[in-house]
Image 1: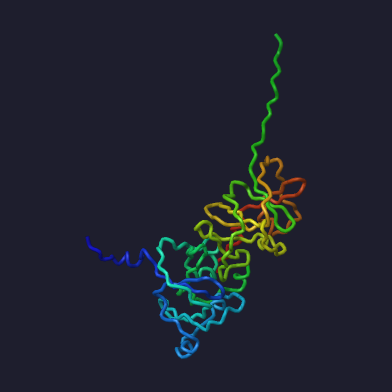
Image 2 (image 1 turned 45 degrees about the horizontal axis):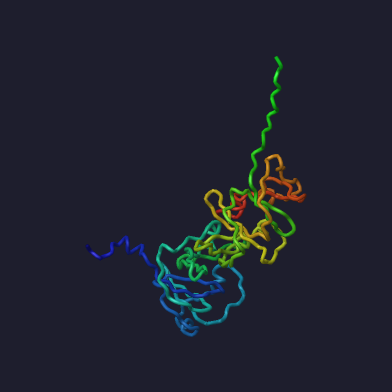
Length: 146
Length: 158
């Protein structure tokens, strides 16, 4: 029996390598394959890639996060973006089946739709960033404050 | 022959269960059939960009569920969570949600005749969520419809 993976199976792997981090005070994760690099403030400046604040991108106001100065360089299907993060936590591999979609009614809001879902890790909920949606315009103010 | 008198038929009303809870200084209730469980006030994990009425999600034994702040939905004065706070897990039309309330007081059986139409004094936004009113220990209880709460929280397509 061949051990080769079919293209369809490769597109839906059984396991998902994730980079876990904190940004804007929230526990987040992103597919490790979407991470191009981790830059300090000076490297980010020299790279010329626009690095934005996650809270600003989502149109939310949060207390200032600890200034780690670290930027996560992410690559989506069409473009790169950099986001400021509070801290890097760990790299983990989780079964894809453990990824849960955001529940109703959150799934309808553009801000939360930036997250492709969440996982439960050590009894805490970690939200997974969808890099392509992260680059969409910030949600309208009236939607955020409903 | 002596005519027998038939005993008068007594038809007992079929009662329905309601879960009574408090919010601010008022009493409210959900239909018991819509309530799946009552949880302690678990840690709420914020979801960036979510509306104030849905402050985040909880880990309910491994399931990620949304939490709805009923004080915000009903336009009540904001309140702190206390050790009496509870999350009432509801399910209606296939949608599960946790409703954050100040405390759960009781589960009661009510006959339909004890439920009155919503008070005309309710504001329009609240009246949309209310199916009726009843009394519990001489206090007015507002009966809320879970499905309507979920509906008003959905943003309009734009």
